[in-house]
Length: 472
Image (tube, helix red, strand yellow):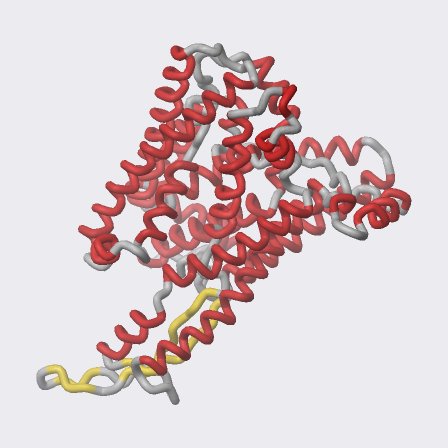
């Protein structure tokens, strides 16, 4: 503990690091200030009524990534969601676009060009999403059904999104890094005190089952956080050797090293992308509801299905977990090209003991990466589903064949009655929230520790080792 406190003191004794930390805190304060500035023309009372019916749907995912701004329709209502979507789209496009692939390989200049295109795409996506949001507000009578309200809402929310994107880039360039991730982190953390108050109210109720449920929830959270930390820090070290060679008159090489491969190489991106894909149709149907007298039409039946399509629904969970697995494999295949890695090793005189350079090395790396990706996909699915199951439950009655029997069994068995409904806590305890909180915290602490060690200060772990983030 003394070493940890000493590391905290050292953080503020380094002028450059102190300036970066204070700048980051200032930008986060500006971001949170914007959460209290509402968009014009919003009926707050009507908005609260709407959220009482849709808070448990996939719109809660959008509220999570906006830091609670979407719930109040502040000027930062969309948060960094359009920027994240634009970044993911451009990363996926590098597979099919030779021009983007070439830019990606050009180093810093190529990265700046891709970032510029990401900003342009963010503006376009923000304009489209805010149009749907404005129409959704009008459909639920939260705002006036006029072109003036539609225009001002789109303009205000799009401008707010651009400003949030600028804040994130400033934190990345002039702060401690990971600007976009830190904005999401701050939005989730700000809601944790309300969760603590909920837990305290349950404990003060004096009900035995409520108390046991709270202890079970706390124990589960501790175990899940420990599990996330363990997996995010885990590496599969592949041995690599470099042959000796002459460079001029010097003999270089002959080194023995390892290539660390993360178990969860996709990070939280597959979960975010799966949530975004599932939220798109529901956002569309929420913005364009059918006439109450036409619920038996095709559009009405589709709309009714998606009204029940949310966390705790078996069909939703099946599609959600399948998308997580799919996007994990798809994203990892993009960020880690085994053929390029094998070719770079061969060019620099590197090889893996017992494996021929070139194609054999690529196949060997692909076999290792496939096994790691399977473990990573299962890990993400478990973390995304486990906490959500405890919070929102699982509507077993919707299961085919055994649904009615299983529902009757759990509702009549003491201690299992919470399964169809969950424990009733808010979304910020969900698996996606925990993944973001733990992952961003590990990355930020690792970056600060690297700055301390570079300046000959001891890190948070003292001289016993280095703390590694997800990107280490």
